[in-house]
Length: 147
Image (cartoon, rainbow, N blue to C red; front, side, top):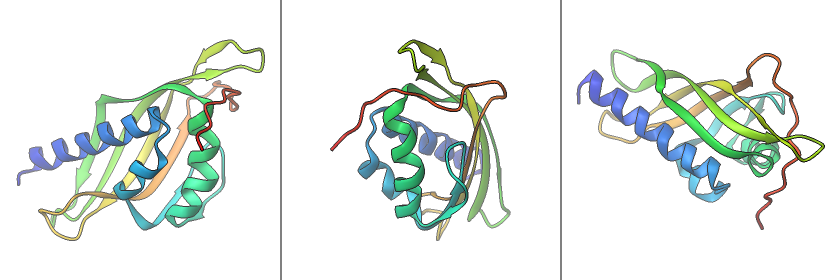
C-alpha cells in the first residue's frame, strides 16, 4: 500500500464515521475506534476509553445536531514511516438548533490520531479532538435521541 492508498483509506474512515454521526448510530461507530481511545472536545474534558467517549461526548452532541458531514476535501494527514500511526486534521460542518428552535450553521475542525496493528489492518481512532470554529454557539438544542 502506498502513501496515497493510506490517505485514501483514512479518507474512507472519515466518510464512514461521518455517516454514523449523521445517523446517530453509536453502535456502528464503535468498531472504528480503539477501546483505549483518548478524546476531548467542545462538550467535555479529556476522557479515556471508548465507553466514556461515547457516553460523555457522542451522546451529548450527535442527537442535538443535524446534517453532520466531514469536509473530506479538507483532509490533511501524516502517516508514520512504518505506516502504523497517522495524524489527520479535517474540517466538518453540521446544523445546530438554537434555543428558539431556529437552525444555525455549526462548523468546526477535528484532529484524529489513528493506529493499526499492521499495514494491511484497518485504521482505528486512538485520539480525537473536536472544536467548533470561533464564534459558533456551544450548545445545540436539537433532540434526535435514540433508544
